[in-house]
Amino acid sequence: MKEILSNITKDYLYRLLKEGKRIDGRDLIEYRDLEIESDWATSAEGSARVRLGDTDVIVGVKMEVGEPFPDTPDKGVLTTAAELIPMASPEYESGPPGEDATELARVVDRGIRESGAVDTKELCIEEGEKAWVIFIDIHVLDFDGNLFDAAGIGAMTALLDADVPASDFDDAEEDEDYLLPIEHIVVPTTFTKIKDQIILDSQLEEEKIADARLTVSFNEEDEIVAMQKGLRGVFKYEETMDCVQKAKDIGREMREKVLDEVDRENI
Amino acid sequence: MASNEDIELLKDGERLDGRSFDELRDINIEAGILKRADGSAYIEWGKNKVMAAVYGPREMHPRHAQETTKAVVRARYNMAAFSVPDRKRPGPDRRSIEISKLVSEALEKVVFTEKYPRSVIDVFIEVLQASAGTRCAGLTVASVALADAGIPMSDMVAGCASGKIEDQVVLDLGKNEDNYGQADVPIGYIPRTEELCLLQMDGNLTIEEYEKAMELSIDACEEIYELQRGALKEKYSTDLDEDEIEELKEGVE
Image (tube, rainbow over all chains, first blue to last red):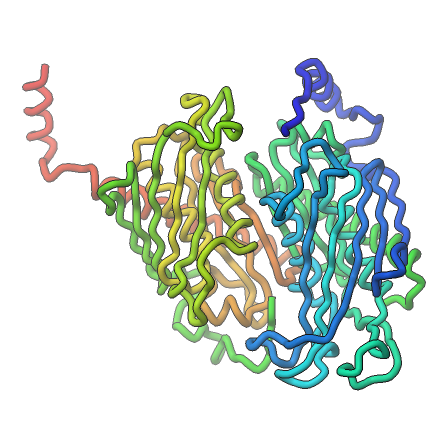
């Protein structure tokens, strides 16, 4: 079911944005309150609950011993899945992940896996035979916009929180659990374009009138490690540069918040 | 990106396939290659072979997916099982679902969808042989197929990627460069308005490298755009010279 935003609300939002204002009083480039709670689900090897305004997401990390992929026999396996469960919004339906959930999972995955955030070589137990398989599951509980950042920050936190449960697996060939080896801390920063205004961390009503979306992920070395443009609108190249520059600074702040929560040595 | 230092991608500072850093692979586009489809096109881009077919505007099924004020552009990106070295299991996987979504969004931007409420414009992109850069090839060829179908559009979208190999920013990554390189930035570009309707990136880039990559890709998109136009002209222009056309016009009057 698709929710409809009334014209009067739309007009109000447009009018506000034109004056550089937002419905909840934030500046155009300003995050909502971010709360990160790591180790929320003790049944998981690592977990985090992220509340970004009223958006509420839990990310859990589970691990088991499995087989490495044939084309990367010396590496562990990392996979990300997202579920937009009907609890989180009247628009979500039960059933297999649709394209929105798939895009969300893949953007989070790209930020973490392809950026080398996790040292997957360390997760190989026996080349070509045995390796740790890491499942990152994103569970959206309450949808009030900007799932990409909430899920990306949650996934990074959950990974930093995760212990490799070596003592539970005879196959692991180690007796003691150890912290998951993390190489980089990557966080996404998502911008939303509405008409000609670009805003940060859009909430639900703003997303309903959004023209385009741009997610930029940075690591702690100030390198861009992932980008994704979404929705039907477009960006000028100069606008993307502006977002990239801003994301660099915002990314620094967000990484600090993540590190504050996980109580782990800076990496 | 799975960067692997053991694999050499540059030899004496040159790319292994002999291309310069700002050089595209050979691209050939042909418009109108299928009989049943309302519009179609075929592209060979290096070793990539990609076909696109357009059906519609036609009635949208399922009906709940109809939009009352406009048409929906529904692209489906699909790889043939035999298009890659290890057989690909047929049917949509997560990668192709994502690409289908992004290509749909990118194309919808240039189609005058408001002319066809409640209908769907189906764009089927079939990758028959894959060798890096299939989403850009798909987007490029789909634009030509839409034009071939006579769908009213504000412009065509040209797609292209740049990336980083051995710390060098280069245009249009080839197969090994894509597999073992350090970054890949595919874009979809609307030349007339100079807008980006598709933008992804993975790997790692400094801000300066991003600037460089975008510069290379945007220039290349302008070049690809000419090839797209060329393919349409090739199909739709006649063998007559201008005088003969004038004569025919007079006959009509």
